[in-house]
Image 1 (cartoon, rainbow, N blue to C red):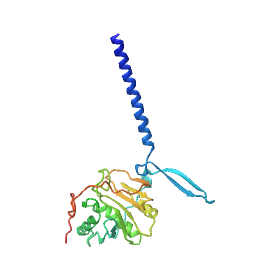
Image 2: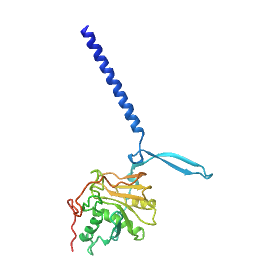
Image 3: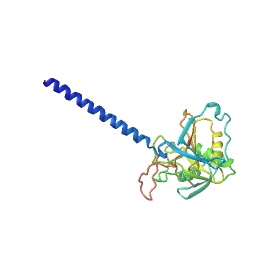
Image 4: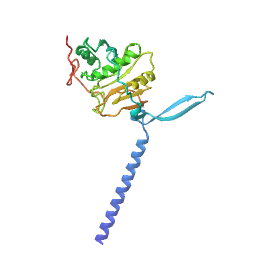
Length: 250
């Protein structure tokens, strides 16, 4: 009898655990069904037809894909003018420089000025941005009649380390009176391989980044709002420098 009672008790315990697990799974499934725009779920897009009727459909917030080698640039990139005129929107700072010296080498003082304006807005951290990214920035400016480029986000210290912003090799940019579709198309034409290019229709900018050697190119559309990383406290009035930041030279 004692053995039978033990078996019955054990079976009852196991069944209780099974039902509890099922209930938790059902709750988890229910929770996952309520997704916001910013967690890479879907969003509703509505448009009016010719008869004025409103039609809506749901589309994915984030849509990305790799790039076939045949769609990459096969011609060498032309040397840019080196001119850069950029306004950091979140810092209310502006700079105009040329990244090249007369002998064709990089002007370290000019790069340092750009690094300052590309700094993390949340922590004031400064990092030496990949100068090849500045070259692409100059090419984009040259192409669009040397119009001023507005920098939405550059280096982001308060960011996940998988982000190219964290590695100081990414920028979110826009140009007044130039559509982001035009900017996106031109940025694509500059990719010989190893670039990430994204378009953010709801935020009105494009993302351009340089990836690690050997990493494939990638394209995406993101309909969520812009986020520049989680807030991280830094010392007020004392900009930190993460190695290797360039120091302005005369």
